[in-house]
Image 1 (cartoon, rainbow, N blue to C red):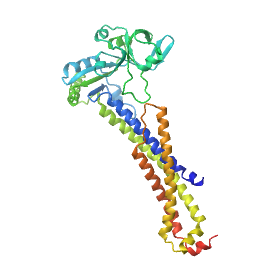
Image 2: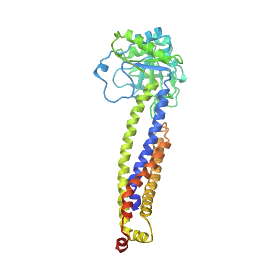
Image 3: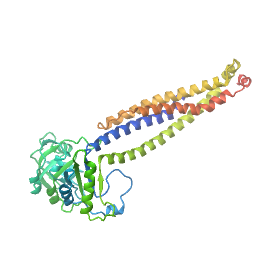
Image 4: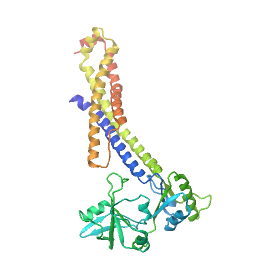
Length: 391
């Protein structure tokens, strides 16, 4: 029991390294696949640089004028490397609600787009169809919904053809979209998509746009240059002025995400080091006690010819065995943490990475060697005569 309590810090430190490492590895894989799902030949255009970042946006970014539908049309008409363009209108601020026969869903991912959105591979239909260009131009009251909206509002009913209330307005459901393969772990598919001009009718004050641009295969860099040139002309920028919009590709967003996870990994190492430090001090303490309790044994060994290095190896081996056992228990704890995270978030593919397991074992053995060195050398320096007389 004393030995177990001594290496408890090592168990916690090693378990943290392995558990958090497995979660980070799974999360990295899930998010990377999600971002790549937007397409390696796609560019997303915002009025500021999209991506994962710390802190608030600058005042200059906040005051930039919004992208417009006309910008999307200009890109479509004047960029030969661009295969498709989909404008996406975000609603104004406030709570948005979908209602059907007593069932309500809040926190909708409400947006307005055109028929090119599904043609560009941004949506896949489960049942029904996407809206057409005719329905968009004529502001038809139709809507397509995501899987979770369908489940929460309609249950086992067929949603296609039903009337649903969105922000107090009635729309006919013409299709249900498949949950996107590029959804993040735990993300709900609460998409509610209206035809672009229908959305303008519902939200006349909405201004914020995103433009999704799809390039021809292998022509993404050329398409980015063309889109940048068109937008600089559209937004009346001088040659020496910086862009007042952001172009984001999947690779750029993955790089931004990994910068964040690297900081998280560093914090994990620091926190784990605290547990390992506490465990190491505990190991050193119990080894010092062990040297005191076994002073007469050390004297007998020395009297029979044991050298200093024999005593050092004996006590270092004991310390390493203690911390190695703690490392194995820590691996078990980390595996439990990994499986617990997978049960809590089924879409998070947690796996215990080989580097985390190897690092946990190496660090635990290193702790035993480092903190066992002083007690071992203290035992080796004992005078055999004084040790034999010790009571």
